[in-house]
Length: 102
Image 1 (cartoon, rainbow, N blue to C red):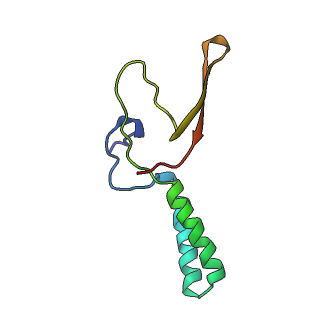
Image 2 (cartoon, rainbow, N blue to C red):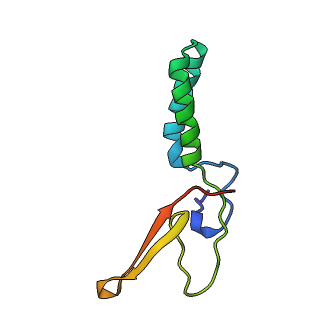
């Protein structure tokens, strides 16, 4: 089975989260469930909040990528706040990252 790259514009399957996030999500969920099982609300509540944050952070939603010449593909979801020409012909693009409304 070949791995699909995100910029390919093709579906990556039914998993909605980036594979790199599972090593953080699973232990946090397990600890939260154990704390909840023992009734430790002061431990399970912050773990639940952390788990929700991680699920949001590592989500891997579908993006439509335009095709064509002379296009730039943005490496992050956000707003371009500055684009300047640097020395030696390099370009610098600053992006203010923000959440994506699906």
